[in-house]
Length: 216
Image (cartoon, rainbow, N blue to C red):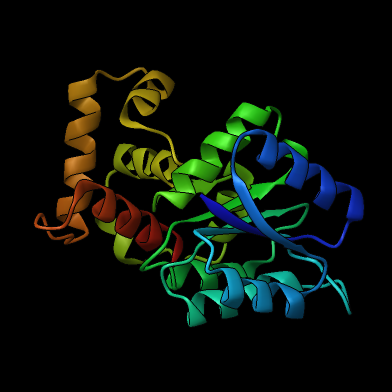
């Protein structure tokens, strides 16, 4: 797995680079500003980019905007946002453009275990999603009450919300105290009600369902 990092905090940037390399992963470049990040993505063609939201020069949303631009230029690029902030508008744009590579958005202070972070990194690199529950909660504030998801039952919405966090079927069952069969049935109903094509792979439909969940 080839990785490009965009993080302006020198200690965090170097620490993250060291951590990932110690795990045997290829950190091709680590940039401290959006311009160098975009150049590194073009040069190294990484599988995934790990990006902070607030970067120079204004420390508002430059990193996230750069991630959106990187995805526009390289549609199959997986992006894992790692930040202390939830920036809603560009987060929606990033998610809406997630037709090729995976996408994740984790909050730094809520990453409690290195193993969990690495699991999220691999999941996103493989085309999946990894969204912090707080990120999901804040993004859903913008969703209309009469959106397309109104066809889902409360339990189906609950299952879909856990899918957005990146939980597997087994983890969803454990969280909601449901059997494997019940989880499978709820997810099947979600796919059916959202009109997701059964000819697509299960992973593709899962990501499409999550994007539908967040994009209303």
